[in-house]
Image 1 (tube, rainbow, N blue to C red):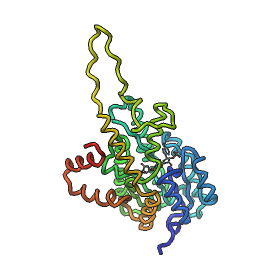
Image 2 (cartoon, rainbow, N blue to C red; image 1 turned 90 degrees about the horizontal axis):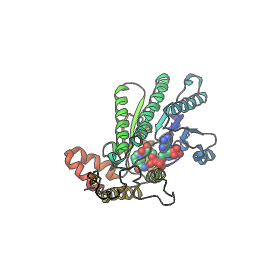
Image 3 (cartoon, rainbow, N blue to C red; image 1 turned 60 degrees about the vertical axis):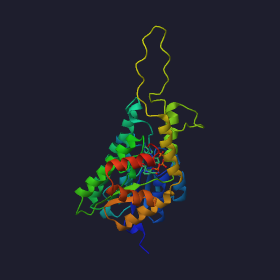
Image 4 (cartoon, rainbow, N blue to C red; image 1 turned 60 degrees about the horizontal axis):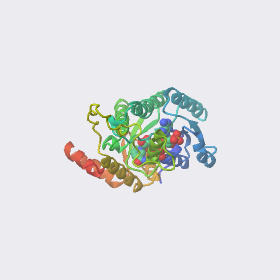
Length: 328
Ligand SMILES: NC(=O)c1ccc[n+]([C@@H]2O[C@H](COP(=O)([O-])OP(=O)(O)OC[C@H]3O[C@@H](n4cnc5c(N)ncnc54)[C@H](OP(=O)(O)O)[C@@H]3O)[C@@H](O)[C@H]2O)c1
């Protein structure tokens, strides 16, 4: 029987602890006796964790849309965490930081009219997430110990269809993890790049709800797939008599392909394992305490596919992915 994680990590900071994987990570750490600071944009969503673990769980309001505010929220929590520890360890910081919060956007990249949609995703999931990693590592460097886990995705290796912003953010986050593993070789600091495959969380529902909100559609009937409004889809009126014909309409990804890709994503998520399994894989990795990539998910996604991909020519791999996502 391995010792509980609390013998190695006394305090942890988990972003996106209100739902899905982050919630499962927080629950797992709390069950192991670790004190957890967990975040949400809306701390009311953290009430169940507070009620269940009043002494060991501290809710933190943190929105990755605002980098300054997110770093301030982290710094405040790091100071609180240090106050709970022995004087020798009193430098602000956590033994474990899990950069987990994130969200998807499903749309053809160039059909979205306003690049701000993609910019917001990159700001939150790449720039501001890297900023939290920076703040966390500065604390760990001062304390000469600590572990940073970046929750990336197998999408860093196998890009998801019609989710360019997400794929960029996750590939960038994994590149950050790998850069840090290289830099920190030979030091006591540990960086892990945790790459989940599909897990049954609210991930797709959030994509649909956000798309519905952007379209101002009734929330009780989210569209499927979660598209249009800000994409170039509006039908054009016929030209007035005698007026020159419209220029050719812009190229659009065929809608049946979009629907098939969304249905494939939905089907995969519905059939995916529960978040507790990702928490179990993370626990195992944290007990090992070694830097590296941790793939987690179904046998096919997390074991077989990465192995096959290493042996396949890139073109063949792209064709296989297109088939897998119904886009062939
Ligand atoms: N589920 C999967 O299949 C899967 C696969 C690979 C990777 N992942 C990654 O795992 C992580 C967790 O996703 P999940 O599947 O557990 O989804 P989820 O159930 O939707 O949870 C997402 C969490 O992120 C938080 N969050 C979202 N946007 C945020 C923002 N702008 N600022 C701060 N917090 C924000 C949410 O908190 P509030 O809404 O309460 O603020 C929530 O706690 C994400 O990074 C995701 O990319 C998931």
